Image 1 (cartoon, helix red, strand yellow):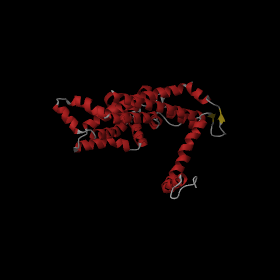
Image 2 (tube, one colour):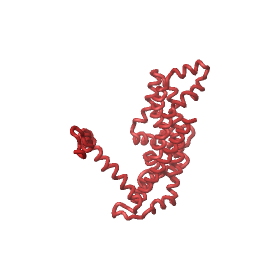
Image 3 (cartoon, one colour):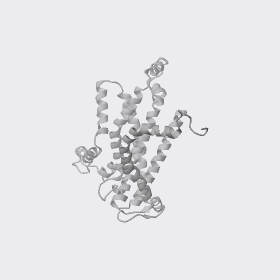
Image 4 (cartoon, helix red, strand yellow):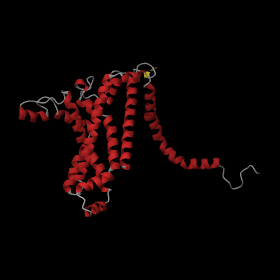
Length: 311
């Protein structure tokens, strides 16, 4: 009797069973998602990690080669060009998108009809099909005199500009289109942050004689740091994954990257290795290298954001 359960007591095992039975309906409703997630997301991710250590062309069984794919990537000059291109693209796009989005949010934060219309117009590219927008931009930037932009340039100067055929034009074109297409979403994020700042802080600063410029630097910008950090981190992650713009404006099919690889990006090069050259093992290794770079950039941004908050 001394070692058995006393009358009316509940053993730990029976308590766990009771809790599991109560949670069974929730788990059963989650099961379809978990199964689909494991089959179509988790398994491909783990399989790509294994393939990154193999030589695999899709027609034969993969052959384990250790770190050979990663050594090949370190010596790949086209990958260095792609990383250089994406580094410049991330730097210019994230910084300009943040500045432009914040400026638009400050200018159009009131609830007037003109401001509401302006916010709608700036936001529209963010919810429009990216492929459709890029197709229109390709028509606008056509290098002959039938391109919409070159029609104006030819009428004014009698010559045309080869926007999609000269290496020096690709980066400015990519940055401009990206900022134009994403500043509306950034505007919405910053607008939500501005609405969360108490108006009493501005009123007290105005009573103390602070100018609007000092109010922006001493009140608005410090209180917008969480939103600013979110915009920078998500913008950098999205910029590193640039593919559709480089594919459509930089040429498709077997001709990828534009002249002198000026439009080559890591994801576009991954596509070229995996689906044009059928070097799937090397492409998987590149995917994990890109994943590591994104993680590093995100951690650096988070650390810088926390450091700025402590100042």
